[in-house]
Image 1 (cartoon, rainbow, N blue to C red):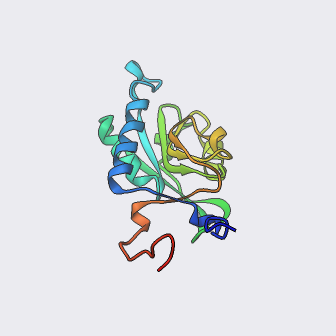
Image 2 (cartoon, one colour; image 1 turned 60 degrees about the vertical axis):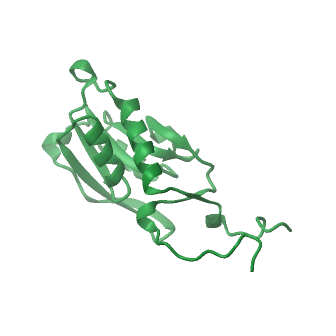
Length: 170
């Protein structure tokens, strides 16, 4: 058995730095530029799915010069265990309508359950994530990077600097 065969699934990690999430979020904004349904391809607002979508949504809003930013809070994880998705805070109802002209941004689409829940609420919104896994791809309209389903993405806001043992041990 090789060292990688004995690893737990979450140990197949994709570590994302602050610089990388910034670059990838800017790339997402560039891909979305002039793609909205408004005049000149304008978007009306950005809605971040908390908490992971907040950093990418702020970068997208800045890059696209969008001043209206709201959040929707969906709980679908307890630590690293996925649970059924539920909305615990909704964005402004008048702003949202059916979602037309709204960019809904998250860091990652994994199983797609979170985006499916939000898409059912706002069927005409445009759903964008920085990263996508195969099971969730049907729920996202625009993304930057696809990773395998068994990859665990480590975002910089979830990490702390600490010693890591060498791959081959000590």
